[in-house]
Amino acid sequence: MGIVKYFAGVVIFAASTSASAGAYIGVGAGQSSIEYNEPSGSISFDPKEVDLSDSDTGMKIFGGYRFSLAAVEAAYIDFGRIDGNSGTYVEVDGFSGFGLLHLSLGPASVFGKVGGFMWQSEASIENVKGEDDGYDLAYGIGVMVGLLDIDARLEYEYFNVGEFEDVSMVSVGVSYTF
Image (cartoon, rainbow, N blue to C red; front, side, top):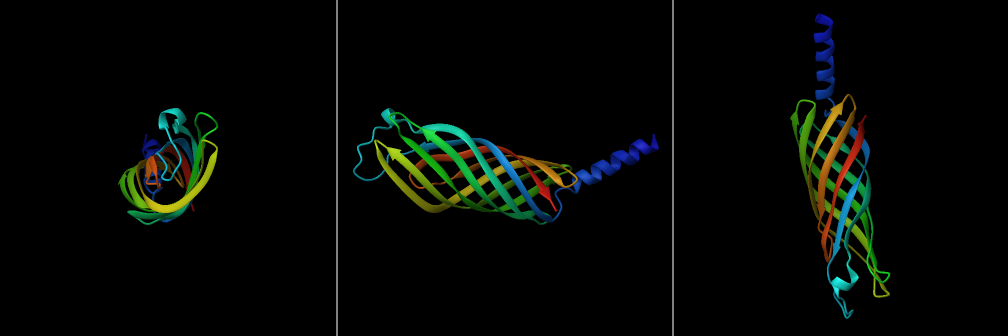
């Protein structure tokens, strides 16, 4: 019985230290949501006819450095492509930078993050193509569970992107701390 307690103690210690300080890299994928507003300018735009509000598979590659309670993180995020009626579409991707705060709960931790998103978008509406870019606020929340140097995470992120009504993503990911 003593060996079982010892092994359980080692596993719990290893799991609780998985969110310790160090550099990390990871990947994530999930459901992105994009809702496009009426564009400014002289284009006659009826959102009911075009319908550029949908979801797609989003992907990201991220990395950062975790301190004991805080972290800094950068990522490249591709939200996919939303196709509307009559050959219309919109795509959004870009780079994010976040500051994170962690609250450790044993082998799991919850986190919140806030930062910026340098984005670019491409859209085709009624055969008029356009591109736009900018830098806006982004934030998110999540939960992370780890064992040894590998963490699994579930998170929700929201991005303020120009004329878009909604750009967000719910994703699952995995990271490795080295």
